[in-house]
Length: 128
Image (cartoon, rainbow, N blue to C red):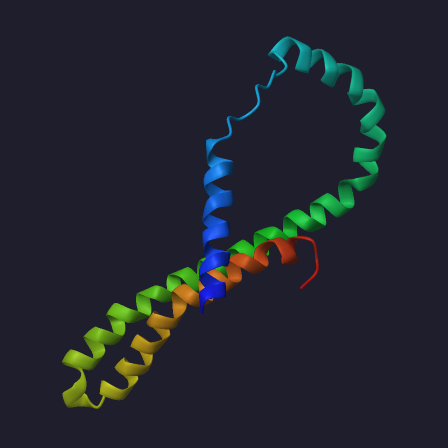
């Protein structure tokens, strides 16, 4: 048990030291330099962009589909109030069990949406 306290103390100490060290100064390009650099690089990069365009479109299509699937999962949260309404007011008509199943689907929906959101980059690049 004591070993874990030493590790935790070391982690806290390193984190504290990292927070107290000032960030280095950076110098950024001004907008004029960036536009001049972009103007110089466009003729060099343009043929590669044209060759990559089918893959870029495919990735955009995959990402749009994955985002749509995520939106459908997020909309599944609405099953919770619908299920509550069904189980409260529909029990005389035999809808209590169906309302409970809808409430279960509504409770699962945020976690399912989170999992789908983690899959968006993988689906974008065609890995899933």
